[in-house]
Image (cartoon, rainbow, N blue to C red; front, side, top):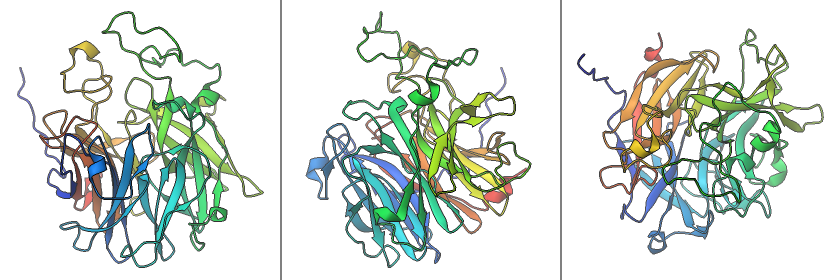
Length: 426
């Protein structure tokens, strides 16, 4: 038997941005990160769990009857220390810069956004961008083009079900001019909506192995045996914006009007992302649709290491490469009844190894390295966000230590730095 090779992690060491005061009952989620022009690092996160009521903060009942609220932190020393700046009454927050302003967008059922005019020192009140709707979207990337900022939030088209039904989520590309006040609804253009259920209609994925497990039916019978696994209907969620800029690429739009939506694919398997595209129209509206390949066939899935879990994509102009931060799967073919008891969900739901890849085309990925890993499943390193600062890659991870409640409900938000990350290219 060959000896086991120990790979050198790119950024195993970390600083804690936030630590739960009660890991069994208060959980830390949704790390978002942005770097300001002067170098200040902004971090956002949210908190929930059965013990959340005892924490001070502007809590709201948001998802499935649970209380949530978020926090903003800032670091002026490269991530070594973090200072708490404010709390906010929504979740799934994402910080981003537009013009001379700093924004944080998320949802409290409806979309909400708040603004800082002084680099995150002080904050205005949250403003609603929708009325009477239900939204979702973990903090994924933000894209800038033509004087606009582009990002995706996902509307839950059939709310009221106390489960995450990703086939009913519509990823909505949002466009805002960076010179306008983005706390105003009229400053945004929302793309048309398309759910996975609508995209599939009666199409099947024969010879593709999707769905891997039988799909749950709304009022169907329970599994025939306790060990039989089922999965929610196929869906997509946690969307990144990708613009193809290489004119040699099959998906390149010479008019610069097409923005691709790269999404976590709920298939029951691993290694694939779901994609759609949002195309700007002559009248300024944005139309969402599926992509087609040269044969005329519809393109729904593309290769993506870690595409079964929330991932983050950044385009780096200096290298003309797309960088992918995602969860590494190692045992998705292990029978569900053979998994260790501390693992949660189906076998493809592994959360303890954070990996980095790069690509020239967002389809063919080269392994850059293992960012960080843990030995025990509950000590997760997952749902991470990243930002470029000079020559370094900054990473904010939803993490857990030995006290974490389970792999999903972690107790710390950790900051990692990969120095001179572009030297990983080969």
